[in-house]
Image (cartoon, rainbow, N blue to C red; front, side):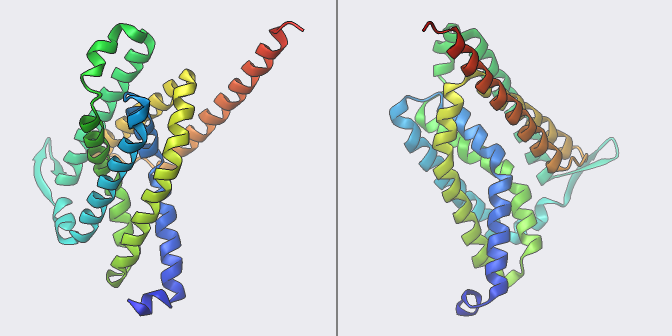
Length: 244
């Protein structure tokens, strides 16, 4: 353990893995921001912290279960000559969940208070925290597999530290992001549209199609950039319409 702390290569691995976990956690942060918006304001911060703490535990458990992870990518059955593994099933189910959840949220946003009574049934503190923890398993599978492939077997403590650093960063930024999304309905719809895209990609990857994540993040960054320009333009136009 002491050798890892004094090894420059270990610090480089920690930086690399932490950056990887944070970048691959962007979609998770967006999903959390949408979810906690269903809760009363007083419960949102606690839901984020508890949900992300559970997510950290599940990521570490996955990381320490390297043998089980190896079995997870082994084919379980074939359908139309295409083999499906446990990882594929997790991605497909997680992607479908994201698609359904995002479409429901868009419908609720468009319909407004008309559906508030029915949607409130799915917005209890426990349900929100459970959804945060479960969907993080889907989002973290690829990052855990990548971390295992990048690091040496003796660098498991570094991988655990990288996960904890990434979760801490997510705890810090998820609050401001959530507040910003809730304050701007068009940004919320844009975030939900991005989650629909992510859900579709997860399902596609479960069926064997590989979609580079760089395309997703570029599309998201470009869309967010355009929306920031739109928000700025709306403020300028509103200021010009004000009398005096």
